[in-house]
Picture 1 (cartoon, helix red, strand yellow):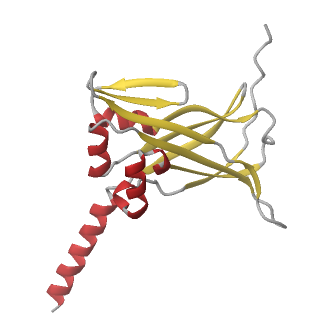
Picture 2 (picture 1 turned 90 degrees about the vertical axis):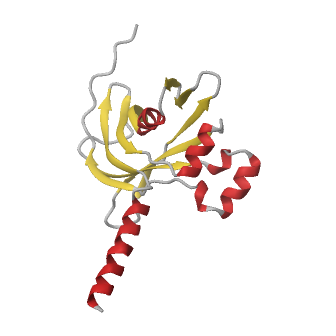
Picture 3 (picture 1 turned 180 degrees about the horizontal axis):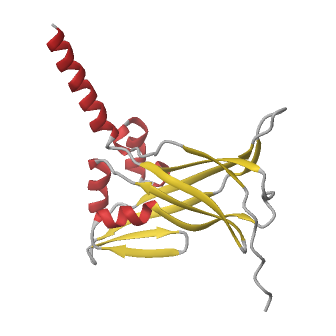
Length: 191
């Protein structure tokens, strides 16, 4: 009986880890000071399920949203919401060029393989999230970050099916961290 219970537990854990590997996750994120304000650098593992991979190879555009929430903790009241910037991104397969195209903000890049395209999608560099003066130097802040598929941007027949099926879902768990606002460098000189 114990052997059977151990086998069942091992299978259950194996299936759970196989399902967990089908998800993406934010590996690390940091907010840094720049002359214009504050920027976010992050590294995200993007792992698509077979349905989303198949949709990409058939030429369907997949739209993603990178959500950041910044708050300042307070002892006597609710946390103060500082900002909730959203970055929209898109990935698709160009059938004529036979290359994957990744659009993030105003940048467009192409790659030959899906793995390279997903790595580009998951790399966030110098995303301007706050203007100068939005944070107080040395003050403690909390941040949350996640990447999710925007199912509202799917073609209408697919977006209707996405409501009832988890095959059309992608969302990383929230990545939480705390930081002290760094001092800003001197602003760039005016021309």
